[in-house]
Amino acid sequence: MTLALRFLAIDEGRQRLHLVDTQDPAFGWQRDLADFPLARDLQRIGPGRVLVGFERGFFEIDTGSGEIVRTCDRWTGVTAVRRLDDGTTLVTGMNLDGGDNSIDVLTLDADLRVIATARRDGDYVRLMRPAGDGYLLCTNDHILETDAALRPRRRLAAPGFEHAWKAERLADGATLVAAGYGAFMARFDADGRLVHTFGGRDAVTETVAPFFYATFQVLDDGRIAVANWQGHGPDNGHKGRQLLVFDADGTLLDTWSDPMRISSLQGILVL
Image 1 (cartoon, rainbow, N blue to C red):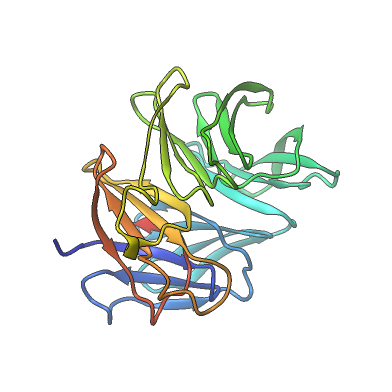
Image 2 (cartoon, rainbow, N blue to C red; image 1 turned 120 degrees about the vertical axis):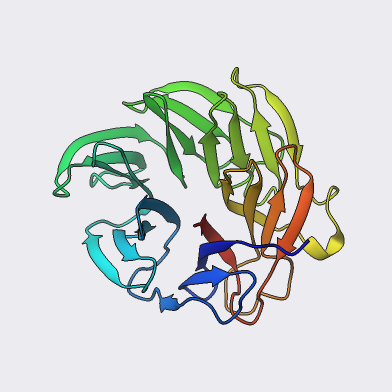
């Protein structure tokens, strides 16, 4: 099978953002992220427009040209951003309200003014995703599901979670999780029970070299694309397969890498 995907890619190792076509190495563009460090989050927010979260805030980019069309550069410690259907933007991170040891979710209006703040004690958070009237927070060795005020509702955990990177609530109420350094994917049912894991080192070939499962995306046909991050620094592209595609049941269907262009694939957004 020849993998055919067009996607935005955050290369954490070289701090670059790419537009990639897996079937055409000459396609697309790349942008240096030196002015936008620790970019982690990607969201399509309209035709040809993507929201990119980075350590100090977020920017909006035109996917056709790579041109940045809007920037919000205001904090330190941002780990996730999400634009909602009503035009508000959720900004998640550590100590964003000026306090210490806090996980914060700020709500910004369409003019980027902070109109609400939710806070809870904590020392680690990565990507956040809305879940009903609350949130899914990746808090290292578990996923914390909260209400809108960040009060705990339940905890989702699997053996091996370490720096769990992303959790997403699916249409059937299940939750899919990338386990970070655990290097596997986990699926929980609507009641929060662990149903199965897939993509681990014992389930794929040695050439895949699972190291850190970071951003993933459930595609329209049910396939699951996963970024297999390989470490900090510019020379990791040869260590394993960078993009993995599983079927809905967790069987590995295909892989892709471009080690000359990308060192450590962390963020993906299939377009």
